[in-house]
Amino acid sequence: MVKLVGFFMVVAVAKSLGNKCDVPPEFWCGSEKVARHCQVTKQCHRYYEPNADKVRFALYYESMCPGCRDFFRTQLTKTFTALKDIMDLTLVPYGNAWEKKESSGRWNFTCQHGEDECVGNLIETCAIHLLKNISVYFPFISCIEHDEFGTPQFSAKKCAKQQGIDIQPIMDCSTSSLGNSLEHQMALKTEALNPPHEYVPWVTLNGVHTEDIQKKAEGDLTALVCDTYKGSSKPAACNKKTGLHHSRRKL
Image (cartoon, rainbow, N blue to C red):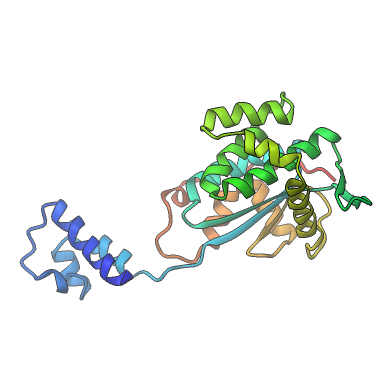
């Protein structure tokens, strides 16, 4: 079915371009020679191209970490915006926090940059859970991480308004037992890292962390994702040179 849909897309695109090919459409992608003659070489390549796996990239961070915010600003936002078609991004807002279970069953979180950071982590965790679609929650979280001067609550409300998102369910979640449980899951994901994280931001590429991967991600994440992707048809951003930048880490 997918191949059939792809074939009809080749035909539709060719006709929209005013194709004058005298070969029946079912033969257009039969050979390179016919494809060139019928001016559908590019479309046929896409039709036959195998589906390459997306590059899996995960960021383990905390909401008020200067180095994490720097990574969002200089690397992650522009890279994911340009490469989201080939990139499977996971955000894990927890970082260097620690947790303790109370007698009530709730988890008490202590964060490196104070209570506000715990609030920010919870807001972003709830956004991921409630908004579900990364094309919706990533711009929202990125906006928060770009705002250095407001409290997490203020930044979240401002960014939600800019993105057309209803902030109230997210704020309600962040103070609820659901939000508490969701943040505990972020803690478990962070604590399961192998090797264990030593600083933030901490990244994994296709489930792997090495110092070389970390250095490349901090210097030019776009190049790293482009070089890792195995598909033959890469986004235009992969053909552009980008400048190196090294994010600040926080132990």
